[in-house]
Image (cartoon, rainbow, N blue to C red; front, side, top):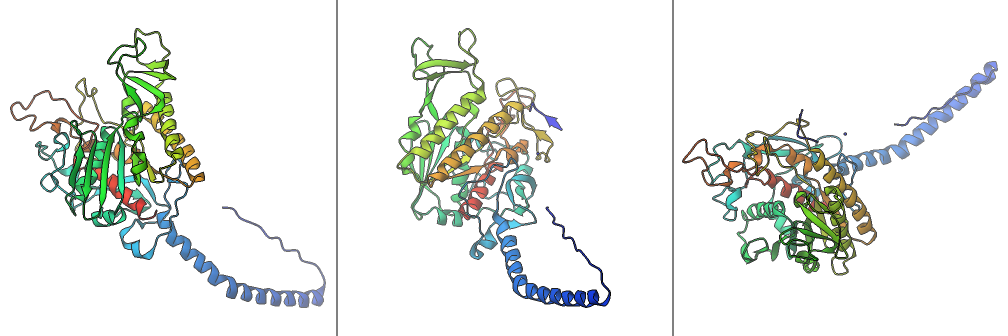
Length: 444
């Protein structure tokens, strides 16, 4: 294993017999006759009922989704499969369907789109255009344990979200995620560019035939962040306000019918944490006399505040997805120190383990999500888990690597090029997230 630092009850019946010659024999025959009659009655009455139950539970088990951590997909998730959707939803292969654990299997059909059929692929994730020489990474499909996941159906997705607004809230991986979805949906209808700011970190796409709007909001910490000079703290040093929601999504939450919330990566950066405008600690702040706060503890407070805001907002009644942490695949260094990712095929299950700190971050996510989902359920709100950690852990081959740049080795085959082993090529493994989203939506 590669490790980068970091799972009926029976009952007994007893028969008592007495003594007594022929009398006992007649009594036994009489009792035997009674038992035969009772058995016939039992079979005639209860056997059809048992058959119906067996068929029902076998049929409905197709869509019983869990994670190996025991964290439920949601707390109000009715998962019966209707016959009209049966051919287009996860087909059961025996046992319980776990959308979030499984393996990558060969997919001869290849990607849903290319750099020629989707105009909205960012340059840094456009691996085809940038000259990546291998294409094998495009021919794999996510196969969940216990079922087969259908290929993405853009028409069905757009039908489900007709007249809706969907927001993706988070960091650059959230943006990577929404751009993947835009490319998938654009194979049915090319969306209009409804809005973008100068940095393209806040953006809207509109699908007019479906009156559907996709939004991405830049909020890497989910809570308020500032780099201004505050209370004598140096400028350009990140300050995190652990008791204040980031206004970039706070003021827009009410307009969404769906959101995908995510985060984690930016908490690894050096920062100072404040509550009630007073410093309570920091992460990696040498030379400052502040208490060192562990990254997971700061992340926990941010998630707890974000979930509380969602579950207590009076004007938000949408469906909330929380997407879990995904590890990078830098080897022999980090992004700033020559780290690379040169794999061309997926890892096998259990070939690569999540780094310890990443695993701790994921543990925090699952714990806080479970608490929030229970609180939301009590208020009639729907929170669902999008646990992408395991599936993408197995895809070191899906990153741009040096091909975040246009033909990086055109002039020098040995050129030293900064690699991207965090984001995902488009098309690429991240497209599977939309397949899972659609599968969950069809059963909501």
